[in-house]
Length: 356
Image 1: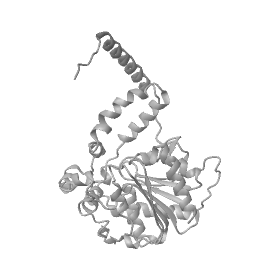
Image 2 (image 1 turned 90 degrees about the vertical axis):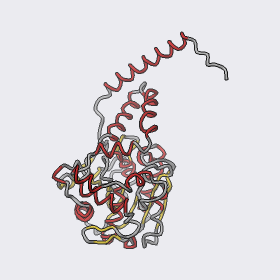
Image 3 (image 1 turned 180 degrees about the vertical axis):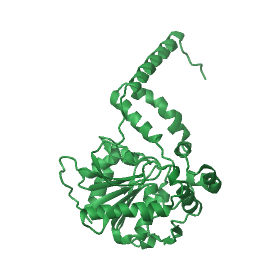
Image 4 (image 1 turned 30 degrees about the horizontal axis):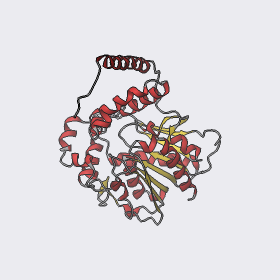
């Protein structure tokens, strides 16, 4: 192998160019201005404890929704739901509105020490149920459409199984159903976690702890690599702001109510109770066969947090005669924010709901 021929003057020139580019990029980041947490106009419909229920306002040219049946989005308890509305040209919310849907969303807020004893039953049969009632009463209907995202999808499956009479159609997006597939690295990590010791010692589980756990699943691409690539994005104000939006969301991690975290890890991950019809919510057994409404299940083919097999396990587990699967050629975050997702996912959801 011949030695690499690097002339000292060429090396010095490249280092100087890199330093200049880095300095200009840092200055651009410092001057990027305020980074929004969601971009679509909305109004507060209902509030309870830390929870806020929003309705998103129609966007021109769609002045009135085509589909009069309201759509309620249930996001995960981890991270913040403005990922669904991260920027103007990367907003699942905006695209659903453009598809003629009436969109509501539950924002879980930031639990504190007063919430440490909240249970899964409180979230599913309490908060979600009262939000469903608020939306239904507002529209004068008995049932609505439910869209559950990630962990919110698991909670939505539980809710629909226990309250099928209130749900017209169910959509699950990047939602785990089988929590113990062989390729689920996160599940493998928590199988032997002493969750009782963790919760008893911590009370609520710090959001930072969970965030760094998720980042550690892909340390190279989610750590060093993205910051190396960042330098190529810092010559443009909008691209720099888009990067800061994502960084803000990634590190905006609410603490988790301790008792809910304990129950979710034990029942869903360690016992795989959802797929085995063994989830217990306040003495009520969750059985997926209790779900009879149409189901649309959307999964990411390159999802590292919820592997495809974990989501596809839903097929045949419910009692619906109307089950549809949609594979998205991307990952867990790309399903909300990529240009490819905006062209595929919200129109698919809109068409599917309109047909029903």
